[in-house]
Structures are given as structure tokens and as C-alpha cells.
Image (cartoon, rainbow, N blue to C red; front, side, top):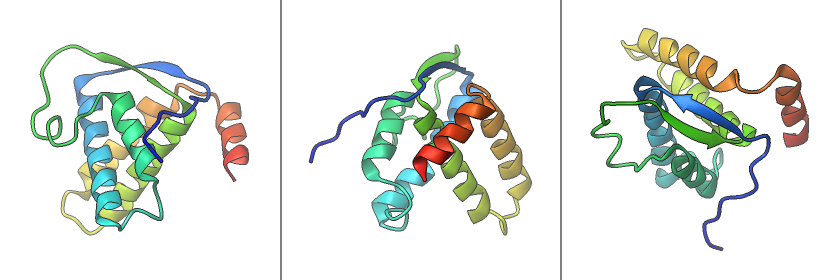
Length: 133
């Protein structure tokens, strides 16, 4: 079975600042590490994480080492991509509880949640949650 980008549900064009893209790149890098090590394979599908990387325009191994300065970037995400990002952020936050920089992780989690979640209504999130279960 080859890699593919499935149908996007409730797509939104989202403008990401350089800081937002950097935060999302870190989350996706952590998710990728977990999936590739086998630890996150039960939580996330490798194809879904790859789709997320592609949608965000992230080249793991490149963008996580050097974030270009500059302008905002516009990406198109479906609600399923946003949910995957939020799950990755929640995982990162829980895995960081005992680290000395946990306050920074919490700030980043709040930032990411605000940046991503706001593009869909509460009703759309509820419908997605019902459909996903």
C-alpha cells in the first residue's frame, strides 16, 4: 500500500507565522520519532503523519534543524489534520511533565491549540469527534 493524501474534511487555509510553523514542526518531529521508533505506532498511522508533514510543508531533518526567517506561510488543513496536530501536542505535553522546561511546553500547547483549533466551529469539532468514534 503506497502513501496517499486522503480526502480532506472541512479544509481551511491557515496562515502560520514563522513561530507557529516552528512549533508545529517540533510537534510533527516528535510524532515522527515516535512512529518510526515503534512507540507511537499504535497511536498514529505513519501515513497520516507523512500527510501532515506534506500539508505543513515540513521536511523533517531539514526544517527541524534550520527554520527560515521570513514571511507567514499559508497551508490547507482539514479538521482531521488539526485533530492529529492537537493529539501530537497533547502527547508532547504529557511526555514533558517532569522536564524543567515544562512551563514552555504548556505555553506552546496553548499557542498551538489557539492557532489550530480556532479555524473550525465548536459544532464542527463535535461532529468530527462523533464521526471519529
